[in-house]
Image (cartoon, rainbow, N blue to C red; front, side, top):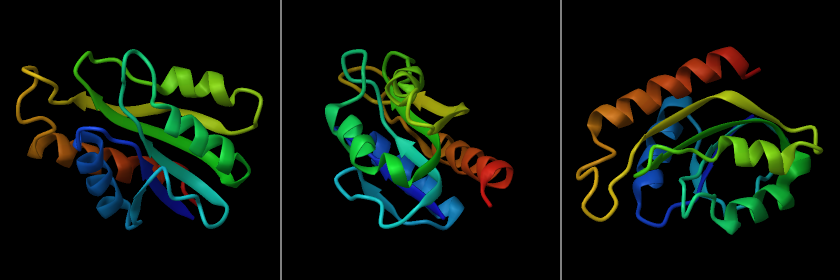
Length: 138
């Protein structure tokens, strides 16, 4: 099973989650929605907030860790940073694999990166998700 979950404050990551979900034919939901069953591949959308992921993302992972096989991280940020390594650290003793492959693009914040993610970013996110699905999904 493939699932798409995301956390967003500005709507940027939701746009990416919708593109990813359409590409892999899975419904996207916020991290407030737990996984209903064992998930072989979880696309997890989380952007950078003050250098880290929002606590809601960590809470989702703790609640659902026994249902997750692999995680592929995607998101946007004004700084260009991602949360993949922080998620790896959180999950290092759980047996959950956080894939090295990740998708990130600029995200609109205050006066930076106006109009991002844009149509090209969404197309690239979808193509990335299809590639990951082909490589890792059963």
